[in-house]
Amino acid sequence: MRLYFFRKTYAQSASWLESSLVLLCYDIYMANLDYSITINAPKEKVWHTMLDLNTYKQWTEAFFPGSYYEGSWKAGSEIKFVAEVDGVKSGIQGRIAENIPNEYISIEYLGELKDGQLKTAGDSSIWVGAHENYHFAEENGLTTVNVELIAEHAGEELAKTFDGMWPKALEKLKEICEKV
Image (cartoon, rainbow, N blue to C red; front, side, top):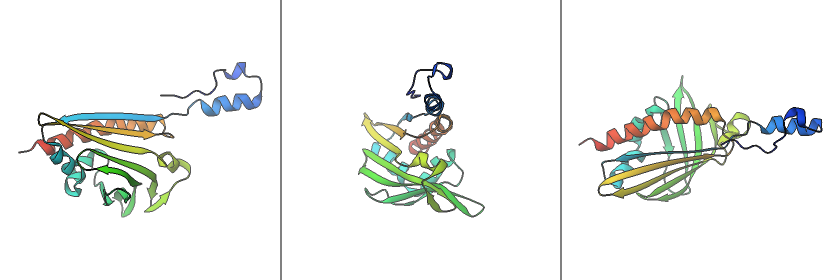
């Protein structure tokens, strides 16, 4: 969804300041992305498979090969989602905002990790305050996982990137969960 704060075009603007504001606000984009999948497994199994470090590494290959996390899924805990390239750790750092076992987990992002250090300014600021929420609902032995990503300062390119990654990741999660 694009947010347009001004409706006038550059040519219709009455002043340089108003014209500048139009151009600055034109590309503000708020990502509110939703992904879901139904898995033939109880929600406890899906929850465990999604969050256990060994299986997490498998289904998150869709984001970046070698992805893993450091930290805890306990409410209030900090957690880092990282990968290493040439020995340099990069990724995203967050805090578990809420954790209702087998039902819901919410991650509030604090910023981006570059060279192992938390960054919150410049390009990294798109992650500050973003939320990633996982909802688990079971009916008749089928579990639906809904993933919601809310990033107020994300660009459209980031949304397109996740649109290519999350469906693949959820398919891999389903494959792992449905193995006998």
